[in-house]
Structures are given as structure tokens and as C-alpha cells.
Length: 378
View 1: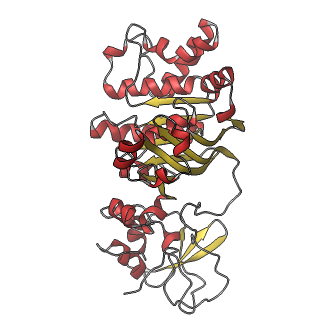
View 2 (view 1 turned 90 degrees about the horizontal axis):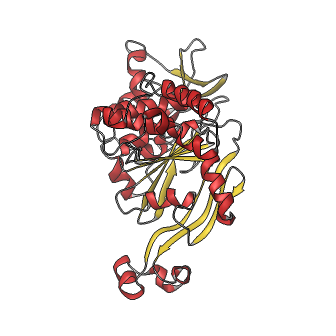
């Protein structure tokens, strides 16, 4: 059996011809090489320690204590530890982890709903950790909007009034904000529901109202804190598709918190996996599934069908010999599962292309290896 490395190259394959590098990136780096996107969010060495004199814990021997011992000796809990990352403009950045991993604390620290103990946060070129109270209010009202698991709709107000609540706080005239609210309701598929009360809507519809409310203020960043956890599975899947559609249409930078791996892989351009307040791995869905950083991530991704996450670019490799100049081509971002019908009855290599660039080559054996259960891409 051919062994694949994390870049998708065959071990020992000879170089042949001017084949551009495939997605051989280190975990935490975007797989595709393109124009560098400006950073919307930068988080550097962020800590959150709950408890008295939490700042004294950082850098001291106490920070290395086991959580139970730290709590017993210092009445402190480290919820976020040395977290650093950047989120590009327009990126969907998913933070994933089990309960207690620190993911919800992290997203609340980004807008100082929870005060960080140490570290630096920048959003849209504004130093959040240094904001005065009024600057922080302006950031929350104009640049960042949050969608929570619990919808937080005002039960005595109509759907329309709920959607334009943020605009009301901003001081926008009533007629103008109603026009904006109706536009947002149409965008999330609730056209005609403006006069309804929240109690007259289903759970999924109420969450759509929450999305419309967040979008109404035209923020630069949308943050989601496990917004679909309380929804039924089918409604949850519909809402995931809705978020993907909205992202295609409005292109907002999104930070999405979830404990569900499938949701993370479905939505994220990149995924960060947290454990006990630390970042374990940052990478594209393909990098997380195809090259897990450690046994913790490997256990998370063990049951994920790799063919539904990895792409042709991931398994592309240099040719073993001569290549037919008329070899068929496949797009680099084609999922491996979608290569199966394309390769049915076709012998030989397929050229994997990213625009005008040849990433490498794949054949039926490469695809079958990934489709087979238990194949580890190491």
C-alpha cells in the first residue's frame, strides 16, 4: 500500500516535470496559496484566569499545576492559556472543543464581555484590550455582532422590532430601521414575518431572527457562540446551510464556536481545536482530518469520512512516469468522494489543476486508498 504524507505526496515518488507544490502546509496555515488577505482579528498570547490575583498566576510555577491543584491552592481556574491566532477578512474561523475547553470564554474575551487577564486583541485595526468604555460600546454596536445559543429575543416586541433593536440603540429613525429590518428578514428567509411575535415562530425561525438582528447593524465581524446547539438535528443542518449561504452573499468575517466536529468541518475555512484552554491545532478541515496534530485530535476525527473532507489537491502527487498530454483534469478543490464517478472506467492519471496551475496528479488507486476504511494519511 502506498503511504501518503500530510501533503498528499507518495513516499518516495520521483519528481517529474514542473509540478507546483500541493497543500503541503504546516498545521495552522491556509492550504491554498493566493493573495494575502488582511487580518480582521489578531489575538496574541491571550490568557483568562478566573480567581483572585489571576494575573499573578501567569508565568509563575502555579500556572503549571493540575487544574484541581490550582483551584485548591489558589482558588483559580485557567480558562484560556497562551492562545494566539489571526482571522483573515471574510474568513469563517471555527473554534471547536468539548465542554470546559475554553472556547466560549475565548469568544467572549474577544469583545471583552469577559475581561482577559493578559494578552492582546485587535479587531479591524482597533486594539480591543486598550479600548475605553465608550470605544468598547462603539465596537460592539457597529463592528461586531454576536449570535448566542439562546436567542435572547424580546418576547413583547414584534419580529421586526427585534431585528432592528440594535439600530434603535444606534439612534436610527424608525422608518429607516424598519426598511433595514425587512431587508434582513428577506435575506434570512423570513419575509412577511415582521409583524409576528417570537412566540409564534419555531426554534429555527427564532434563530433566523437572531441572525437577521446581527446582520442588521452591518457589522464587520459576526460571532456565533454555539447558536444551533438547542435545535433539532434537521433544523440544525438547515441553519448550517443558511450560515453558508449568508456567508456567500454577504461575505462577513465569522467566528463560530461549536462542540460538534461535523459542524466545524462543514462551516469552517479553518478550524481551531481547543483542550483545557489551549490551542491544540489550527488548520483547514483537510489538515485537521488528514494530518491530526496529536492523539487528541486523531480521536476526534477518527470517524470522519476522509473522502468527504479531503480534496484532490490533498492527495495530488508528482507522476511516476510519462503523462499523457491529453490526460483529463479535475479541479484542486474537488472532494475525493466526487472523484469516484469521474474516474469510473477511466485508466491512468488525472491532472489536478488550480486555475492555470498544475498541482499534481491522482489516479484511481489514490482515491480508493482514501475511500477505504482505516487508512491513515501519515
